[in-house]
View 1 (spheres, one colour):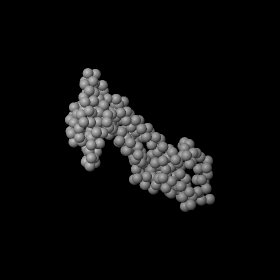
View 2: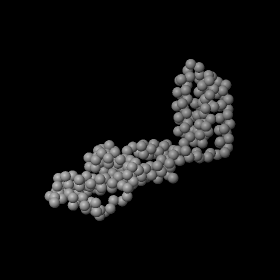
View 3: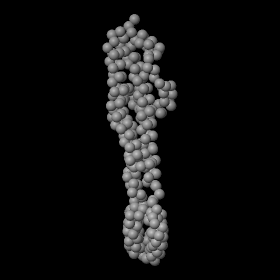
View 4: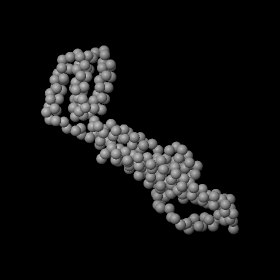
Length: 262
């Protein structure tokens, strides 16, 4: 897994959503309007017959639309879920190892600092902690070790803070946030941003509000309600999940006959 792969998955998902308006117009809106125009222009149909055929056309085409929405939404979600999972793995990846001798010396220094803070008051303890944190430098492994033992390091400062406790809590919290950032591998920050982006995209509607309104105007309220939740629609109407025949069915042929003036 790489940052580039994660970014590519998010971009592919974003393109599905970006292309949605044009795909909808070409595959659904224009064909439906052509069908409606053809029905309305047929002089053999009665006014009531035209209304019934137009409603039937909307119903038929809305099935295709909801099937399309289901496929696209599923592909969109799969890309983002994969991106989110891989980004999370990068964020929580093990920090690279450091030289064994350096690690041993750092661990010894960490034990010394714990003792020094324990024997100091809150002000001196915080100063010692600040100076020690600066020693972690750009070594994520050292920062990760401090992060794991941070609660123990700050406990004596908290215990001796007295009425200044709220101030010390706030300062120690911000210091801890800095330690967490330092403990991440270099790619972790960008991976965290990509994780949050993928998560936000998953939470957003696939068809935005403007597209929902267009669908409602073209296909009616039911299509508008379910275009962002086609799975629910097909749970309620499982037969509508079946592929729509390309040729006219017998009921449709009969409906056209019934719509004509006899």
